[in-house]
Image (cartoon, helix red, strand yellow):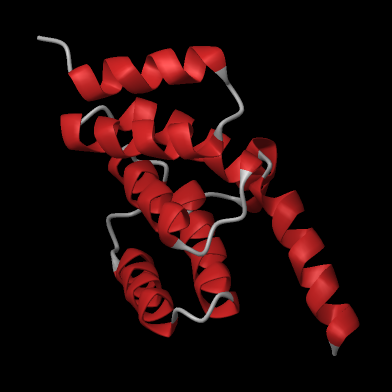
Length: 137
């Protein structure tokens, strides 16, 4: 059985592949449908196209964690925390901090080396963010 919302959003995406809102909408629908790989794909594209206030980073982190990609999930939570604070959403940031603490305290969750995150492009973006912070101090 096909999902009419997903079908409609996919048609919209075919007309405008760089529409961030459509990518976010698809991620939300795929999340409801339990298609974690599609959630990740569309959230990553959304985040490449739009400035997020934190919500998409948290959704991405949860999907990555569900896929066992804990190093990437950790990085997404960290970026979501920074975005949430930057946009005045302290309760969202606190929620992500709690999830990150839970992730870090779970002995069954392996920690990935920094090189694994760098290979996915997360570490280099964080380095740019950290460099900006250092300039502000």
